[in-house]
Structure formats: C-alpha cells, structure tokens
Amino acid sequence: MRNILVFAALVMVGGGYLAKYADRTVTHPSSNVASVQHAAAAPKSGTASRSLTLSSDRNGHFATEAEVDGRRLNFIVDTGASLVTLRESDAATIGIRPTPGDYTESVATANGHIKAARARLNRLEVGDITIYDVSALVLPDEALGQNLLGVSFLSRLRRYEYANGRMILEQ
Image (cartoon, rainbow, N blue to C red; front, side, top):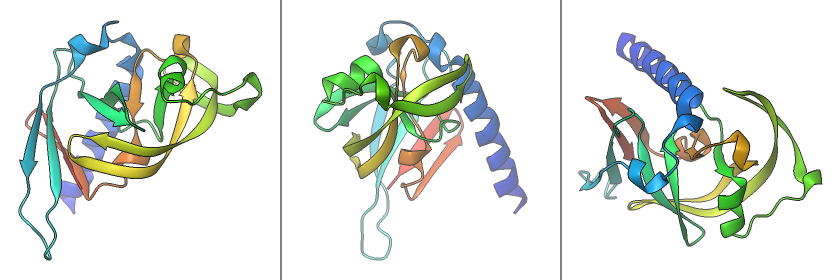
C-alpha cells in the first residue's frame, strides 16, 4: 500500500511538472521525440499484452509520436491532463475543426483558464498500443505548445508507470 501511495504522489508531482512546462517545449516537435522501444510482455491469461517504453527527452518529458485517426502527431505524455489535448492546427489535420461556438469547456492550464472544444478520437495508436473512442479537447495553438497524451488515453491501459527515467505503457 505504501508503494502505491508513493507512486501516486510521484505521478501527481510529475504530472504537475509536465502540465506546467508542456507548452515551453522546443518549437520543432520532431527534435523532442523521445526514443521508443517496443517490448512484448509475457502473456497473461492466454492473451499477449503490448507494451511500450519511452525514454525522457533532454527536457525530462516523455515525448512520442502517435497515429490519430490515421495521421501522425507528436505528443507529450501528461499524467496531469485529464484528457488527450490537441492543438487546433493538429486537430484540423485529422479533420476536427471546431467552430468558435464549440469552445464551451473552461479548462485550467499552467497559463490560466482557457476555452476548449470537446472532441472524440476514433483511434489513437502509440507504438503497438491502440485505444478506440478516446475523449479529447482542442485548444487554440497559442494556448498549447504541444499535444498532450492525457489520462483519457492512459486510463484505458492495463498499466503505466514511471521507473528509472523511463515511462512504461502496457495494454
């Protein structure tokens, strides 16, 4: 139980750090993409799980490339973000174009409160991990420097953990 509480505290602190500094990343997303290693986990109950290990980038963020509804986008894993959050320009590349009237959600960010539009992603793939029907938000580009892979994705995994400078995602 103590280990779980310590882990939860670390996740909360790490999530807060990532949320605070997510929009201060280097402007060229491909230079921030962390190395990705695919690993097949041992089968459990007759089903093979899929896992992905992310190494932190030079800023300490866990950046990765994901395929959203067939299009490649760059993300930072953010355990402090309730939902997957997309920059408006990236959302447009996958066909999500909210109108000004769609920005009805008020969200608190490291830079204050901002209006966001709700969205649904049919399929989000990171490495060999695929999650369907993912809740998301769209924020104006000036409010968000990088797409965030939030808890609406992470909570659908079997587990995710931070250990020894690496983030492990397992489906």
